[in-house]
Length: 333
Image (cartoon, rainbow, N blue to C red; front, side):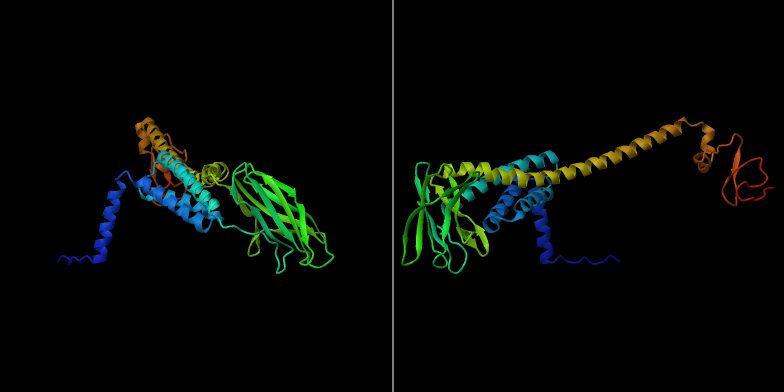
């Protein structure tokens, strides 16, 4: 009696439909662009929400590898080629994101930690310009108590690749408020810069910067107003590093692991094939009578010149002229 056919549920039909659509999609030329696009989107979201995470190079590379594998792109050369394309896409995403972030960043005032900071109102003016703009740095110092000196007031200016520490000039003071004002003016040849202030108070260095919780971070600025001028150092020192020293090497290592596993499997298969061929070759060269010699005796090198038979008690090879088994002592008629 035939078993009744269970009708498909709507969920089963939807699942089957999706599987069929996925199989059809794998046969289209859009698999690689979709995989690269999804990877780029995830990379952008990670830059927007967890820019300092160590996962920013690992997750996109794993994602791209997994998507290509699921989409049926499994040839190592193709995967590496698409990985390079994805790295270029990541360079473009990283550059556009950072340039936009730099040029739309809110103005931050540098201040030293504490409820009554010693250094405060640390600014640069203007916040944007070019290599002909004169930028002015200002900071206000207020000793924690009368008679305490604030010395060696300076501004530390860093770009993506350079750093400099400049002594600030005394600008004036307000005796009533017990405040002293310092300034420094300069030209900047680098499009992307950041800064913080420092001074010695009671023999200890005090830093005025941008504090996020207890974490110190330099204040970003000034930034050149020309986006292309900003993009050049960003590509050179940030985007290329992220794409070709963080993302692509991990992706290439994954591809290399697959290549090595395939190579090792082929080596094993070739070794087994050669062993089989050699065994057959040896068997074809054996005399015809050797095929009648028990395999155990041949393996142990005990082939006898005379005929042999197998002991019915222990299975050992026994010369035809023997009256007892040399292995177990069984007597023969």
